[in-house]
Image 1: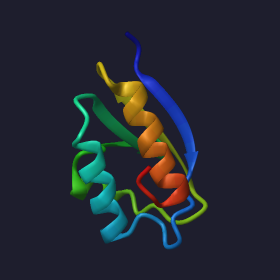
Image 2 (image 1 turned 90 degrees about the horizontal axis):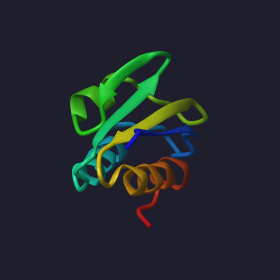
Image 3 (image 1 turned 90 degrees about the vertical axis):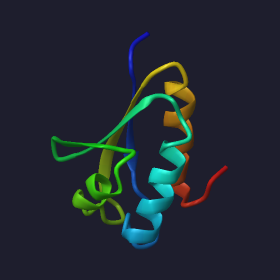
Image 4 (image 1 turned 60 degrees about the horizontal axis):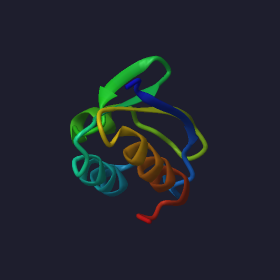
Length: 89
């Protein structure tokens, strides 16, 4: 099965600073799939708080979310929703 890849515009009020980044990683770790977060061609492990923080994602920026694994599609949908809405559905 191919990896699921989605383009996402981050709508979190203050971007992906420490607290939302930790929430993103916590959600990503619930899935078996490998999660990759990409900004400006820089790719990091979406399950690593240091990696996610290193991207310094601000509100309104566009990133790519990629998930590869048996639950990759579901992971991509939930993480995309989190980045766009700032809530866990």
